[in-house]
Image 1 (cartoon, rainbow, N blue to C red):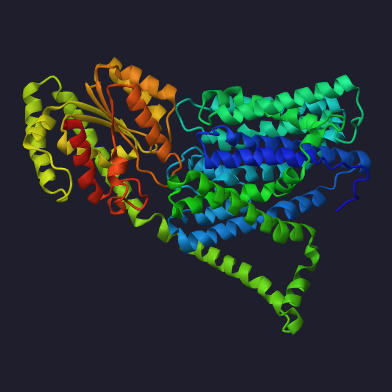
Image 2: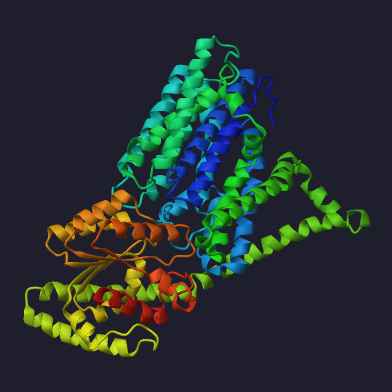
Length: 630
């Protein structure tokens, strides 16, 4: 594995940096709308990795005049691979036993993760990192490990070529900085406003600039060549720069959103530059930041940060599939954090450290020793039982995965929304065609009234009943409805009651996305005097967004906003309380309290406990209609 480095330095404060990064990522996943920039914890990991790996490779070259590439690969694999393999197999086994709707593409997911190309699998399958509502994959976060794996594969070879043929530090530094700029430029050019940014978020080419900035820092800021004692003014200056960088990082954790144009057109690059500055100050032995970030808590978390990052997302996904976290978001969040820390500590103590130190040349002899019938090794045989079972169950899941592409409930919902979209598109066309023809509208309305009457007669006996006068009003009332998948699910049922309701609904739509839609309808004169909004399922809105929406709608229109029943997401109560507060601020905004009406009726919903099923629609549509017509 090559000679040991005679002169090397463990920078204890880097555990503090890793702690800050992993805490930011977890907070983002726990509360993505309170810590909307927490995803930026990953670029910090990238900068640290780029710096440390390059610094060690240069140390090896300077001390030994060679780089042991094979030894480098072995060390990286022993450090990182066991926990990744364990995470993928354990997660697959759990999915096989308890969440088979997630088995889709599981063989490809396993293989691409083991080969460190999973990020490109996500790109090719158009997976979104920012869809916080749909069925969440417990593997989503592993994209970053694939990018680091690709970096570890190529970088020692690149460094060896650079030190042999370029030799001087300045041009080497220049090459790294230029490559970083090219990567950031690719991110800016490939990003398209209004489209999901996951291509540039997952791509190795568009994310490498964070790692490259760390590598460039290592060229000009080697950890073993800096003075431990500095003049007071210089030391305080470095401390000030470091604390300023830390403050900037925290502010961006709080306020940068992952779907902002700014993030992809310079924002993430700027964040990486600030991270590089922060890493540089912590790495300097003459500054005080290293000591400030060195404490038992940060050291404990930092050493386990790899495991914490690995296990956090599966824990969150599986926990939230079983528990209505909206009931007690803080308490359940605390439980999730405790589970993550416990699992990560077990992994660190009994998997990562032992296998990092294990001599793999003795693998076969160790296995033979364990399975010997000798009673002295009876207990050790159990060491193989658990991993063997996990591997067997995971392989079973990989084999049967085509049979479980989705649950029957999910499939039924998808089919219902697809059918509704076609019906609604046809009815929207009729509304547009008949808007200038009273007779045509009357004809269409008469037909629809018959349909709505028929629908009303088929509703559940205890569902709200519309009076004949209300039905007559409904057949001519012009309404514009805009919303997310819940509205898409109920759209056909609503148009049966309101044949002149123009509906624009889309799965996964966020509240801010309806702003340009309403603006366009208003400018074209197609915005009715009565507006129905169904938003908040996929996340909360800001005061500014609500202000923009209400400014477009004006004070003369009647606006009805359906609140949300989404107990598996932490933002349910936030959305509903914010809507109640907004209704007090805007006199023409009326909240339809679907949550209170439906919360004790789980049979009204598909398995996601969010979208009304056939039974639920018998209550949803009449209830909404009753609130509008009362």
